[in-house]
Length: 531
View 1 (cartoon, rainbow, N blue to C red):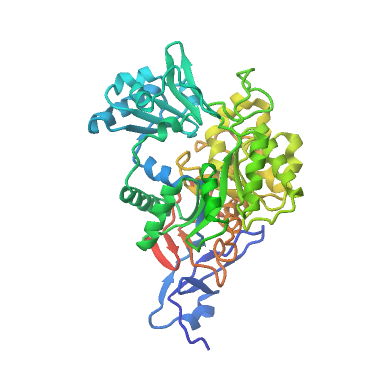
View 2 (view 1 turned 90 degrees about the vertical axis):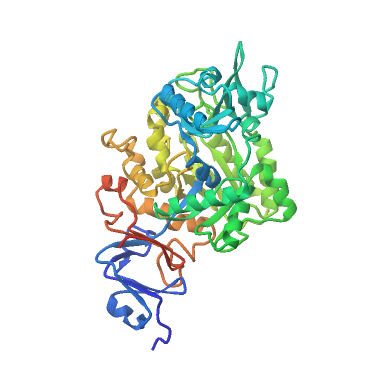
């Protein structure tokens, strides 16, 4: 006899309890008490949990699955990007017109901020003169879609003190011509500008983050792994103190904050179910778009270009040892095949050191291109591959142009799984839209929204719907040390879930592009519901 009735009982639906294997695993309903799943089964089986105050919800055939996790985004940047001028346009003139319009709406001397331009779409970099023409009286700063390049005007260069005599910073490049800086900054040259931007106040950032989490809920996301800085963490803490935090956040530590983290004694896994410390984030190279990804062989259209190694092997090795000795796990950005070879070999070599393993696994972020000889290196314990399926759709044309036949091992999800690797998925928002269903569509079809290319781009790297759903639900939970609490819908798990009118596991692939959750629940409470 059960003496405690449930707060909610959901029935008459299809509840996918997990996506751990190819076997189907679903029940008709569930009971929820104090934010935790307490029982699964049919309405008859759940009857003992129903009392006079229980909310009984007839799902009418709808589908329930665990809420999504975005395993790689920039929460502060995403929150701000919602307010930036959208420069992901087909041509420079359209972006310039939008920037001019925003400039005219802003007070004197306020920065004009935009995001999203793509070198592969425009065919060339913008110039400071073009920006000066439409924004002569205010500083302008526009990040590329990859966030690995920035386009600025003369007023911004002046405020940063950048001139023809300014040296390139380590790991960065100021593009120049005979007239001085062209207005394009690559990699570690970007902070020369970004560091002087007037930051939003704490109150403004808290509000921006509140807006961002509401936007993420629309995509069924209740957990994120965030790669932005300490101000974002402080604002998340403030949201939590105000009881307004509605995301479970694993907070990564930026590499330039490592000394402060070590001084504080922070360790990976420290925190609670809402905010916890993740890995320390390093960079091995740049990005594909600006040709700063570090390559074993030159770019197909530039025989002298091998990209940029933003941190040397020896430097990374010492930093990795510092982290591991102090209980901090490692997260490292690697795009090109040379960068991934170095990182895989480095992480493999670390195994020989008799050091205590951090509470969380190490991670490689992106893993966008592999060399065939390095595939066996994927078989490493306590190593997670954090990838972004939508990147493949966005980048396929550019990758073909710049990498050519090497693309058979680009965004190689099937190869990772075949080697027994743990795959977790995210969006890199604001680089891509943080819509997991778009990511799932990309992972299972390797096609653009219009269905091209027919059959999918290097379709041998496609994965199944269950595997993709696993990479957005259970796998990220395991990777953040919460595998026994979230990411599955089983008794004793937290009631973080989403409900759909169509089943994302079985609907037509193109339906994934327009499907949105009809309801989202976090910690047993509805945060979105339309039925």
